[in-house]
Length: 410
Image (cartoon, rainbow, N blue to C red; front, side, top):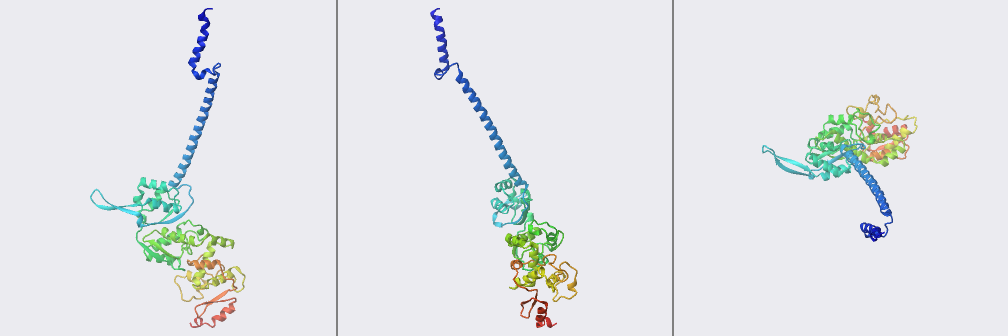
C-alpha cells in the first residue's frame, strides 16, 4: 500500500470534520444527533401550528360573540320588554346657522350624543353607548334629534330610537300640570287637554287600546275598555310638552305609579292574597269617601264588609261614590233609583269590590288601603261637624243620623 493510499481515509475523515464545523466534531458519531434535533423541531412546529389554530378560532369566536351582542343592541334583538320616558333638555343642543343653495338661512341643531347615550343607557334602552354614538355619527342622528319628552321602548332599534326623538315627535313648549288626588281618568284627560298637552279623544283612545308594558296592568280591565287605566294615572305635578303624544303622556303617569307602588307593597299585597288591582280599587274608594285623617278607619269598614261575615251588610260596600262614578253627571244627593242602576260598579247592588278603581288615588290612600285600622266598624256617616263618625251596627248609625241637621233639613 502506498503512502498516499494509507493517508487517504484520514484525509477524508478530516475533510468531513471540517465540513461539519467545530460544534459537530465533539459528537458526530454516525450523524444521529442532528436527525433527533430535526424531529424535535418538527414536533415543536406542529404544536405551534395547533396553538395558532386554537388562537385564531378563539379570537374568531370572541369576535363573533361580540358581533352578535353589538348587532343585538343595534337591531333590538332578544331584549326584555321595557319602556321609558326620557327628556332631552334644550341645553344639550347647539345650533349652527347655514344657508341653502338659494341663499336662505336656517338653523341646524346638533345634540350632545354623549348625554343622549347616557340617558338611553340609564333607562335600559341601549347597552353599548359607544356603539350608539358611532351609529349616530355615521347616520347624522345628532342632527335629527330634538329637545322634548319621548316615550321609547326596547322594541326600537337604534334607527327607530333616533327617529322617535326627532323634531317631528317633539314639542318645545313645556307646561306644568297638577293632577289632583281623587281625579277620575276623564277629569285627568280634560285637564291635560285644557293645558294643550293632548286631546281628550287621543288620550281616551290610547288609554283604552294601547298595550302599555307594565306588570301591574296585567289582569286589569281588558284592552278596549276606556276605564282600564283608572286608578293608575298617579296624581302629581308633571311637566309636559304641548302637543305631546298620548302614549308619552300616559306612560309618564304610569311610570310614576310604578315608582310609588313599590315592590315591598306588591309583595305585602300578594302575601295577603290581594292583587295590585284590589289595593288600587280600595284606595280609590277611600280617596273618594274622605280627604281627612280618617282614611284608615274608612279602610277598616271596607275590609270588614269584604272579608268578615255580617248579616247586616252581606258583603256589600254601599258606597255612594261608586254610584256617582257611573252617573253621567255628579248629583248632590242620590235617589233610591240611582242605587238600583245595573252596573258592576254599583256597590249597593253587588257584593264585593266594584269592577275597578273609581278614581286615581294618592299615596296616603294607597297606604291606608294596605293598612286598615284595627276596628270593628261596619258603618259610618258624616256629621254636622264635617267629620265621619263610625259605628259597629246599623242601628247605631241610624240613631246618629237622626240627631244631625244635615240629614233632617231637606
